[in-house]
Amino acid sequence: MSAYLNNPQIWQESWDRQQEAFLPDREHRFAAMLDAVAAVTGGAAPRLLDLAGGTGSISLRTLARFPGAQVTVLDQDPVLLTIAESSLRDRATIVDADLSDPSWRSKLPHQEFDAVLTATALHWLPAERVGALYAEIREVLRPGGVFANADHMPEEGLPLLSEKLRDHARAEREARYASGASTSWPDWWARAAADEQLAPKSVERERIYPAREHGEEWTPPARWHVEALLAGGFGEAGVIWRGGTDAAVAAVR
Ligand SMILES: C[S@@+](CC[C@H](N)C(=O)[O-])C[C@H]1O[C@@H](n2cnc3c(N)ncnc32)[C@H](O)[C@@H]1O
Image: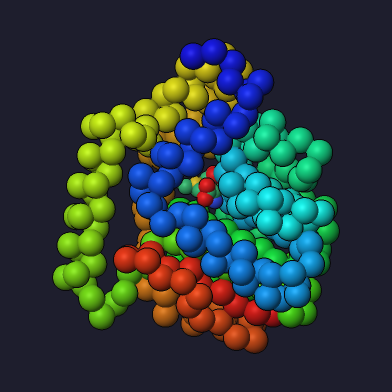
């Protein structure tokens, strides 16, 4: 594959298609989270942290919706951060940090954000770390600032339907892969590894996410997140979006 970093939009589009195979309503959850940001800033350009932001999907949508936003993307994946850097250039601050380590906050360019958003990421962390991380996130929000996390959060009252929803989503995903409408997760990473500019970053990535792609996935219901956010010191917390077995929870400092 040729050096697509010269046109990072191509990598952004293929990442979006690959993620949408898992999350067909991905844009809806992003829009719901950005509505919460607009609500706490009165529509003004926010200072926003895109936590575990990967290629900067949330940052790009933030800048499109709020020109003048000050955006920081934090992640530890060298491939995704390279794509984020190429895409955002001087429009965002890029931070390479591991959220497993509580010192991640010391790498931020500011300690007072209007909003911290994260999507499809915190299930990579163990339960006890997510609880502690919520309290740390609160510390980098201004009073009245908002945090939102969209992730797999099945509805606990619907275990059988949730299983059927997951089966249905899996079948749809396989159909997308079979038709070529989107690239599967392993195929996307194989393409990145074959790209002349991203290949060295893929080697670095192997060291960060070695044996498996990431740890055991831990996906408690939204209620767990709401309670963890309140225990972490947020003034209020609740669900702002739901789609099938996924949800977005928000909390206000
Ligand atoms: C499925 S991707 C989602 C990326 C982006 N939020 C999006 O919606 O496109 C999950 C992201 O979480 C990041 N991540 C997982 N564990 C992390 C950690 N301990 N520290 C920093 N980033 C982490 C991964 O590197 C990856 O970019």
